Structures are given as structure tokens and as C-alpha cells.
Image 1 (cartoon, rainbow, N blue to C red):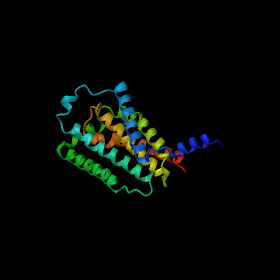
Image 2 (cartoon, rainbow, N blue to C red):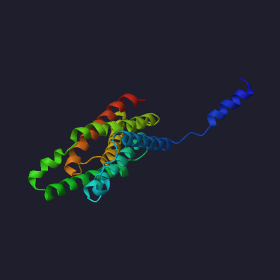
Image 3 (tube, rainbow, N blue to C red):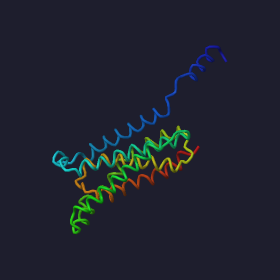
Image 4 (spheres, rainbow, N blue to C red):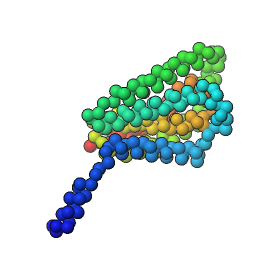
Length: 211
């Protein structure tokens, strides 16, 4: 090997590597942007957005989905780094779940019982079930791609948390379009869409994140 070739090889080896956490955050942001582009090109904001924002049920959807997305993404990152802890991130997921339970209880308390089923079924259930996974697929692929660079000891579990995060990201975007703001609707149909992505993440993790 020539001296110049050896120097070039050593220089390549010495090139700085992006920290895994940085790559993960970049992939997460990329997934969010992809979902946003798809949202605005296919679904779009609800026409009465300003009026809807005046009712607490509309911002409540984001208060539920955003911490769920952040917490699940943080847990997936921690699982891909065996030495990292995930306690704080798991508490975000618990907090989002507790808020959902409180919102459901409040809705059941203030609504007449004859309206429970009407609010639960809503107007757009089938569209919701299609759209949340559609918006979440880009974030899930981005997360699985970068998680392959980590060292997950439980590939399926790591993928499931990534799928949960992706599903919550898709649900966050969809919430800006969805005309159904009742916590009963969100608890059922958003959860089913997110569950579908969690299962997809589990399957993808088992296949793609093995060492």
C-alpha cells in the first residue's frame, strides 16, 4: 500500500461520526416533516379551525398526542442504547394516558348518556382509521431506518415503541383536520389507528432491527 493511500484510509477512519442520538433526532424530524407534507397535500386543515380552537376539546387532542409521541420516541431511543434509561420518557406516556382517562371520565360526566354513542362513533371513523396509519408510515420508516444503527436488545419491543411514536405523530397531524373532537372518539378511533402502527412497528422491528 502506498503512503498516500494509507494516509487517505486513516483520514477516513478518523472522520467524525454523527452521534446516534443526533441521527435519531434528525430521523424523527424528517418523519414529522414527511407526515406534514403528506397531510397538507392530501388532507389539509379543517375549515373551521379557528372556531374549533375555542372549544377545549380541540386543543385537548394535541395535549394527548404530543406527549405520547415524544414519550414513545424517547423510549424507542433508549431501547436502542442498552445503557440509556427510559424512565422520564415512559412517564410522559403514562401522563398522556392518565390525561386521556380523565378526559373520558369528564366527557361521560357532562354528556347525557343518550349522546355517548353518538360522540363515540362520530362522523369520520373510517377515514380516521385510514388516515392516521397513512400519515404515520413515513415517520415509522424513518425511525426504523436509524434504529438499525443502534443496539436494541429487544428488536420487536423497540420497533413497537417506534410504531407507537409514529402513530401518535400521524394522529397529531390528523387531529388538525378531524371534525370529531370528543375524547370518546379520540379514545377509540385514534387509539385503533395508533395500535395498528404499533403492531406494524413490532413486526418491522423484529425483521429489521435484529443484530
